[in-house]
Image 1 (cartoon, rainbow, N blue to C red):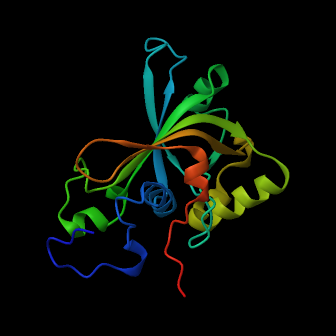
Image 2: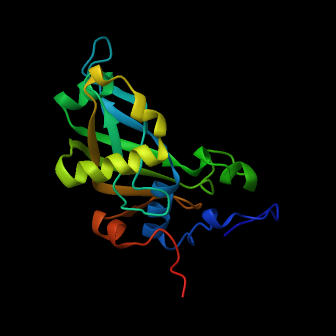
Length: 190
């Protein structure tokens, strides 16, 4: 890990070594509370073009990482309308969303300010998975509890088909969903 400024790094930000790519990806997914989701627009005048929007996400309550980014959505939202036409999307998360990169003196675009791009699709969840999504999201985004009920909110997950990781110089690395879900985002304490 680089610590050019000799700053004390909080325990929560003991980012895994950059050669443990799947762990880095899981770490970022758990640390970030929001993501930029790109869809293919179904709205004129940008129909067929990429369209990016911000969404609150959670892969589980703090300290309980599932690796699955969950979202609380409504069909009133323009990107959700895009997803109804084409559920394929990409989701970007960066440690620039936390204090880590600023504390380390890393520019948000620097590869050292680690970020991931997830490719896949968005699907609604129900039953026990929706219960977990509710706990995951409401524990990290308590304001959601009071959002207007007439918006018909529902829980969804990002179904990951590919993981792209940029956490070091030398270009992007890819991780399969299997490698991603098998990785532990934090070190196991013995």
